[in-house]
Amino acid sequence: MSPSSDKKKEQFFQGRPFVNLVPDSEEDINMDSNRGKEISEDWNPTCEYEELKQRMTKMELSFEEMKGILKNLMHQPNPMSCKNKNGSSPLVVTSTPTGFYIRSQKIQDIHSKLYGPFIPNVLIVSDIPYCEGTREVLQCLKPREMLDQDVINLAVCMLTYQAKNEMTKRGIWFLPTIFSQYVLAWKAQTQDMLKKYHNKFMGTFDKISKIFLPVHDSECSHWFLLVIDFDKKELIYLDSLPSHSARADRMRSIKKLALYMEEFLMDSSFYMTWTRNKSNISEFSLVTPNNLGMQATNSNDCGIWVIKWMIEKGTNEYQIYVDEGTRLRIALDLILDPSNLLNETTLAVAKQSRRVEQIN
Image (cartoon, rainbow, N blue to C red):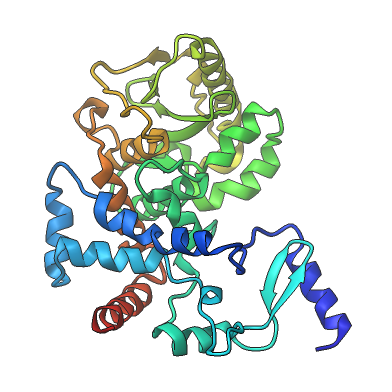
């Protein structure tokens, strides 16, 4: 391979997240091999999800089999931990300033020889073109892991797809996490925001009933949810871990978002006719439903609660139940939902890989 080709690859990988393919020690290899075990042993719901059970029955899978498949989807053995008989690595790796890439052979062919069916890194490609779900991203759905905002955005894409395919007179919008972050950082120019988000996540204003906005408290590394309810004229504040010390800042964020959305929705692109009905969002009542519950101690579940609130869409006055099984349910929903263009392919390859693992 020529030096110019190496240089091009370094430029391609510059600034991109990477996986260190070379384990630093035997201890790292052992830790790596135990990751899937955490899912298999700990990822158990304390309540039954009837819909989830029906879905697995339809696929002729038991709960334990599905956990095994998910373990394979979200983690595979590190190729570099496997050595040839002479002790050398079966792969040739080139080091770059940002990580490592395989230079001499195709990883897919080598992995198939070593481990059987190769599971692609990308497991979720949404019909709403916004973000992808990789194995690395989905790792954060293991118990007690801090949730990556890409998982929230994958849920937003899934729910947007569902909302656009529902035959309802009054629609619901789900906006990605970066939307509120742009607004709160005073970087939300109306035309730029319309270009980025209108066609993907919004519709016409006269057909909207609710807007779901995930909001990040950067000071506390905490996610909460703002729901703008146009029928009840309410700003609904949903927080799985309310904080007295952080409340004032979170209320200011909500007010800022309300003022911005009021002006934002005045744009002519949201209306079928020249008539514009001012929403007066800033005058809506700020409410917090009673008996919301709280996330478990040290669970890092704030993002999980946000996703679950969006999935439920306000049924039962926003009262939801979250346990470790909720993470499993979200993983299954994201991978198997019709909005995932790779759902059938991903599941088929995972089943095949699971069978090979059981034989071995």
